[in-house]
Length: 397
Image (tube, rainbow, N blue to C red; front, top):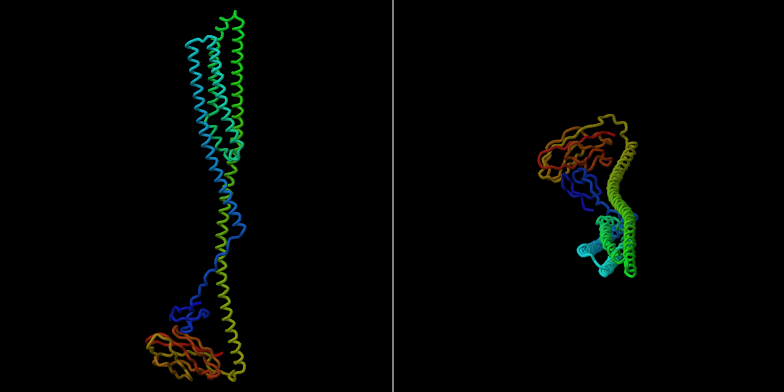
């Protein structure tokens, strides 16, 4: 790690130090880079992938259902055009009958023509029914129930039923002319049999049209059931979408919690490191105190009765801002070349074990008194250009 700059003297210090080795100021804490974020739990990743796959599948089914809806719209338009043609042709036949009462040959021709048109219409309706049944049975039909509601709203089946009723009405308009023809041909058995045959054919045609109406009504009932089923599917789709949204929210919350836990772990690591550093300092102080206590217990000056504390003041003038040393030995002061001493005042050291503490901001203890110098010598470090003073206190153990 890089050196730590002192906020006061701006000198570099090793990162493991707590106080500046030049001026004694507490160094700023080194912020360790945060650890890389851990990957999310595998179960959350798997669940997220499954939800994304289900969402994509639902979107594909929705697009396929829209394509089917376009086809049904085209089928609806074709059926409406065929019904309009049928209604127009029935009106034309009715006008022909009302304007010119037909004879037997014309009635036979009209019935044959009407039967042919009914057959074509029935075939067209059967094609529409088959198409609806195919879509109903297909997988897309099971997934597009809301679209059937729209199909039913087109009113296709009521239009077909109305067209059928109009055709029956047109056929009913033939009844007066059929009665006149029966009266005219009452004496002719062969002609009467032909007329009865024509009447039977018309009855059969009417029954066939009634059967077509019944089939359309049955199809409409089936379509109603299909609409209900498609509504249930839409509800299920909405519930799945809601679950997907909830899962996404849970995943986001889990990621946020992971980030918070990581930050909390980083703060606890910093607190633990600070506690370890403080324990090391306390351990060192305890060892120093034990050593001093050992020295004191064997020192010949245990019976010392003089002053137990005092203050020493050194006034000086510094030529630069660099740290400089002042040595006090047997209460005589000397200094480095860039320091000019002015005065030394206060209480002399009593030549017994004592502790030195700086009392001014620009003063640090470089070498305290010890048994080797008879507890009479101390080296202090000062910093600051111009006239100033270094103050420190001493106290006897």
